[in-house]
Length: 220
Image (cartoon, rainbow, N blue to C red):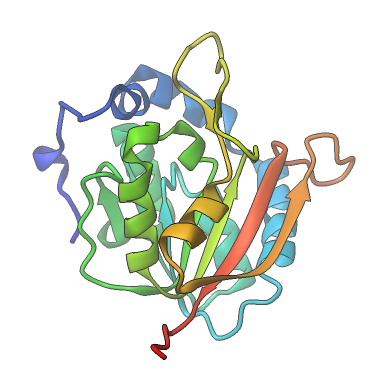
């Protein structure tokens, strides 16, 4: 269900949600758009989704203005795309890219999706979620996909917190994909890789990506 702007929450369970819904989230928009980013995203998804088959629908958690979804649309013109975005300004621009009816203007922690999708995607978002809320987001990601899940984040084998643009408690690194698979045994690792910010052609922000596939659980 799409959440109308008039119903949009002004209070949040975590300080990180309020941070991204507010002025910092507004400023993020200008830094993360343009043709160079689109080209890098095209290259990224060609690599990260190489093993994906028969995906006709995708939902992105934390879609911002839709730069990832725009790249996916170019690669898969027939794919149905939806996005969840907490920031009002970004959600409005996202609507211009994928259509208002496909935008869920809400916090990831609050969203209650009624549909499932062939592919669920989260890229550069889990690192900004309050660690105490990660289990909730993991459950929502797994529930949202009928088959494929792509997680692309900063990786660290153990949880760490690092400063983010002079702000504290706003960026967290850990093994997100490993925690998802530990919590949800139905998710099986299919592929993984790394993209480097110094790539001379298609730089990304030192992201490690993990492609998982949902498997039926078998009782013995």
